[in-house]
Image (cartoon, rainbow, N blue to C red; front, side):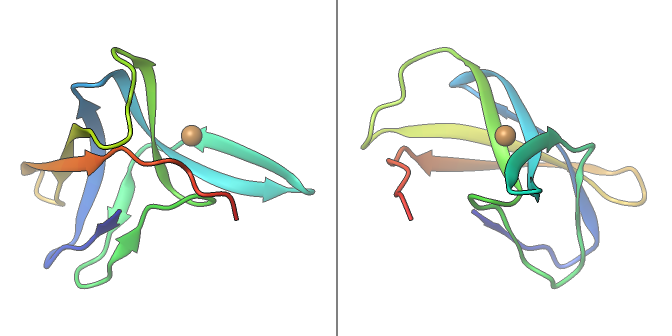
Length: 102
Ligand SMILES: [Cu+2]
């Protein structure tokens, strides 16, 4: 997923109808060991697209409420907050796909 904004903003939380909890995670390599941790938020600079992808930032869905099947979509709402404290929610439909091995 690729995110872009015309103004500086920050992704502060995410929700989905398919999961009890959605967290913003960061994946890093530490001495050949892949680790991931939840981050407080994801800063999005004006005009600088940010990509969520395997091996980097991603949305982690936990406590799944239903089985995710290829060909179906899940709804995800992303909550952004700018420097003025104004919030905006963006809704996305994400197709369920198999993780392609590299
Ligand atoms: Cu994760």
